[in-house]
Amino acid sequence: MKRTVIAPLFLAAAALSASAFAAPQCTNAPRAQWLTEAAMKQKVLDQGYTIKKFQVSGNCYEIYGKTKAGKNVEIYFDPTDGRIVKQKGG
Image: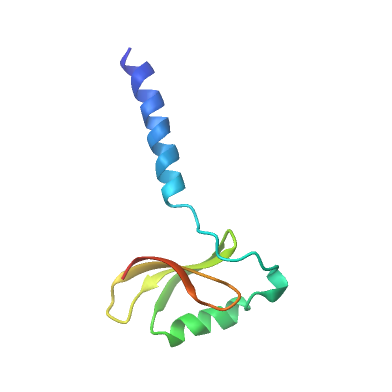
């Protein structure tokens, strides 16, 4: 009985948590209009962040790194202009 109740609750919680961390909608522009990864990384570094991980997440550039103050941060950027779309931490 416990398993039949717990399993659906676990699956529902997993689905909700996955959607909570989904990448935001950053752009509809084609990749040909995106900044290069090298240019975006430099832009991020010029803003004072350190990059631990840089990746393409959906239609965003995403970094995991640290702020100038050394606080952990996760940031989603619009790849066409480098503006911050969503930030966690910092």
